[in-house]
Length: 300
Image (cartoon, rainbow, N blue to C red):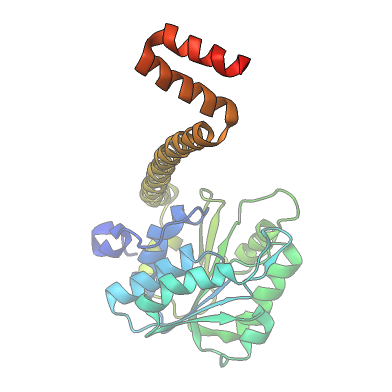
């Protein structure tokens, strides 16, 4: 059985180009490791959303030169669990994705069932399922795409440890583990991630994840957990710095706006105009002279 050695997969130490608020950030190092270990010919992600996970896979493909064809499938219209949105989400993702990855990657705006018709049976080496998370929906995704998986095929499920509301990936994951005994790996952090080899010719490197004793598995999980937490810390620090900069800018704008408003009031408000004129008289004639002149104007 091969031993897991992170030095054999330095890709997982790369800093991701795309960081955004996402429970997937903690799994980015594992995604990059997976591309290195699998060297997939075709990768498909179902449920791209902001693109944190998808762009991590694409970045690894680009940096490792694996020649992988990548396809990110999503309607980019949302769902009851994540909310609904317009064109802005996909447009923002394209601005990041297209200049970097358009040579080998396609963002496919489609529902998952329709998109499956684009792929021949037995053609997909790596599939990431992260769409609508009810039990019925994720089971349908798995069953629809299972014939598309190659003999090297590996499927990745996100949110395997979320049991709130109507999330049901955990339930399907329990069934998948029972059906593919000895060919799966999972972690509980980052809402949970489950990996299963559905093909019989999966890479030898994955045996370190499937066959290691419990203490070795905990060491591997701890390694990826720490890398993922480091990335989340970086993201939080960047976000805090941005918020502080925005606050400072707002304060500067607020001070400038307040000064401009005060000046406008001084120039336009009748009482302030009179007060300003009176102060000018005081400066020219002294308090006594200014008061005498003011009295003459009132009597006149």
